[in-house]
Image 1 (tube, rainbow, N blue to C red):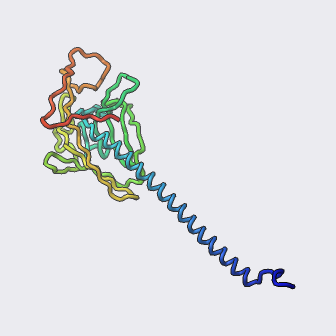
Image 2 (image 1 turned 90 degrees about the vertical axis):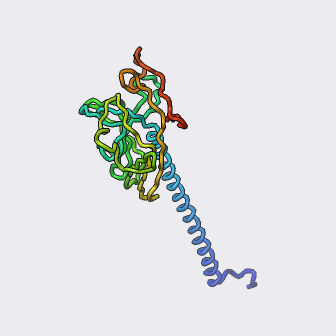
Length: 245
């Protein structure tokens, strides 16, 4: 029999199988690495997008705080902003609540934040002064949150973790304005990213008040011939700009 008709020897077959197995193992490891990298990148992008949305929501709320107190379900007065002194981690009155349907409601909104089972929740009420059956609407803002701290900064840069600073400002009537901090530092402790900090500057715009002592915008669409719609003068050097969501 000539050499051209001879088959492969057992040693040649084993060597070929070893080479193919080595190539297959390398390809499998490379494919697994690509899949794992894609999953990690997708999860990281999802986390970062959630973090960006959460801070964007908080920025819209904090940057548009207005000195408008409200009444709770029991008729007790609550200050325009509560930090470390109420039922929630932070509770505030903000402006800029869009009303595309032109309903007879305020363009102001009462919002609050808390953490429940590792989830950062945002509550808001459909009315400012609540009735006994007023229930908040809850939104899930961010998962994997271990802690939320609020630091309030004054003009000198001094910080405090509770607001109002004294009991005299804890409950004010609608005609009274509570002094508000100049900036708010939000510190989020998350499982995936650790500690994340953001500082929000509060808008320096005075809210127009009608002659009856209530803040304009409490009930837009309802006529009031005695309402004084002229805004107060802004302090020198201020930039009165209210953002809307």
